[in-house]
Image 1 (cartoon, rainbow, N blue to C red):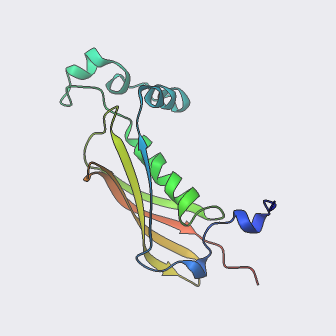
Image 2 (cartoon, rainbow, N blue to C red):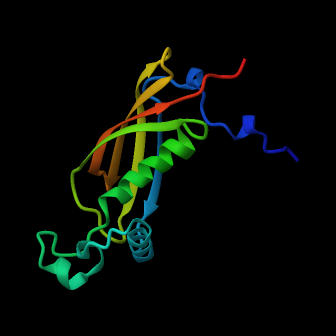
Length: 148
């Protein structure tokens, strides 16, 4: 049985990353997810929680918090690539389309630039539902060098 040392829990090191590398995380959004997110963040805007209110808006139904999609980007960066050990230091994000309860959101990060000297990795971050972009932007992570 292998032990969980810090070394084998670590994600990609700076030297492992290449421009164009990609990782994704997908989640189907449930009613519980939206209610719990509202409770955790305090964002109880009725567009997210009140069907009668939401019917009167341009969306004509409840929509998922935009920052929920941003949270899925964080899941990619923190667990897939660069993964554990990387520090999320910047995110630029534009919300392009609404997400609804029952939608499966896929968050994808693609390495765009690697700054070896500063240990910074810039990634394109995109969230899609059925191939349609619902959020897009760029993130910067600080990534460890491989231990000597």
